Amino acid sequence: EDQLDRIRRLPKVELHLHHEGAAPPAFIKGLAQEKSVNLDGVFTPDGSYAFRDFVHFLSVYEAATSVLKTPEDYARLTKAVLEESAANDVVYSETFLSPDFCGGGDVGAWREYLHAIIEAANEAERDSGIILRGIVTCIRHFGPEKAKAAALCAAETAGDWITGFGIAGDEMKGKPKDFAYSFDMAREAGLRLTAHAGEWGGAQSVAASIRDLRVERIGHGVHAINDLALVDEIIESGITLEVCPGSNVTLGVYPSLAKHPIEHLRDRGVKVTVSTDDPPFFHTTMRDEYLNLARTFGWDEEVFGDINETAAKAAFCDEDTRDRVL
Ligand code: ADE
Ligand code: ZN
Image (tube, rainbow, N blue to C red; front, side, top):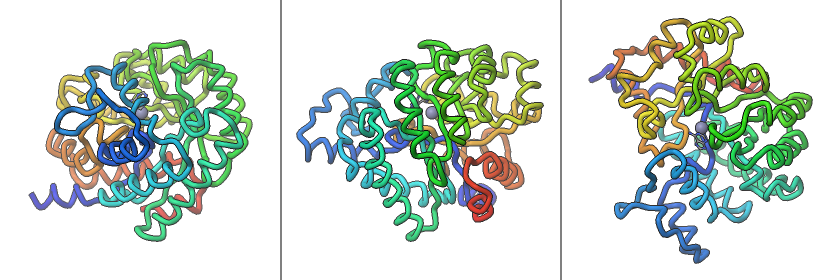
């Protein structure tokens, strides 16, 4: 028990967190009341987010997000999210932000949201020490044209705080190649790249994202395990996987943590990291993820220390910031 408690309390680096997906249900409910937004169907009677499957999850996510209307709302969200992360001993976090939700893809509006988010993050860093950086994320099921607007927002605000570009949303819609233009634009602006793949799609979806988007990290990537030649390629190219075990189990990607391939991937030599994805949606926290992995796979502090070092090395921040972590 002592050992498990030490593991729970380890300092943690989280690379895969969706900003709106980290909103506590009570926070979203409060905003909905303030703004008289109808959120019928978004919550279960006991007050958690209600969804049947992944596609339904995405629509509930977007409905909940619809109450976040102003930069000030995003500043309040940022404070709530970082308080929760810091309470889970997270010392460094990268969050996915979508211009689609923050100003509808307009660069000027996006700058105002970003300014409010960074101010709130700086305040949280002063209070608890937690460091946040942002990855601009296009939404796959919104299509390649919206993605170009998101990439332009990303390119215009690339720097010390916006450090990366990515893609989330419905992996079964479209192909990675449809988004290559946006990823090229982001790369040319100096941004680091990650893509959700191999969560719902198979190993070929991971392979296509690596080939066509030239990413250095993959969100999830777990279905790569079904193609061991691809696993070898991931190892050789040094690509890091942002694995979200609790998310995968709650959404039914795998029936249980015991059947999840995270240990198999790690044992083969893949750079594996651990994140929550959308913690309140999946009834998880970083502490829970660590505790559940320790219980299921018998991982000790050394394993988690290694995972955190892997995450810090794969972080998109500059070297000085990385040196302040761990
Ligand atoms: N957006 C928020 N969470 C997501 C997930 N797990 N997969 C794809 N898009 C998402
Ligand atoms: Zn995700």
